[in-house]
Image (tube, rainbow, N blue to C red; front, side, top):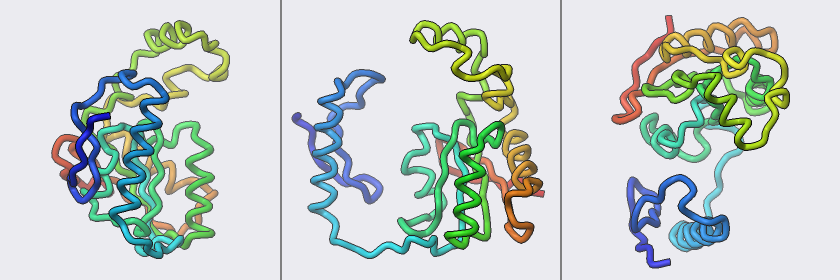
Length: 201
């Protein structure tokens, strides 16, 4: 494929140029990932990583691709330090999967602190429901496949990213599914620099 292998931020980086969305055919993407995996395995010794997070921490963050790798680096997290759960907009709106994951993390993996991390320039904050509905239709997916809830509620749209974090923190603190002794914190990350600002009261 002609890519060169180099180290960046402690990770193997297979890049010659940054591909745009959809640039790589599925078979090329699979090959790229396989090459990266082989290089990673060759460069790293087998190590035992605990299945229970060392810090007793679960991080709830956005699925934004700009946070991939950067989130853990900015928080100083190593493999085995924390449970990381990523959902669109780091929101608890209508996300049973988020609650399920957190309950398992708390009960089975001894998590005692949940950190909700929002970020600046969040794409979810600017999604226009009508335009999204049109794009959904173009991909031949029925609007009804998402249920009958208004799209704005289904997304959990909140144009204020800091307020979105506070709302998610409040919902997690109030849910009866989590023990009362679990601490829930909130923070906002500057997506370009990784700088963290604490938002919890």
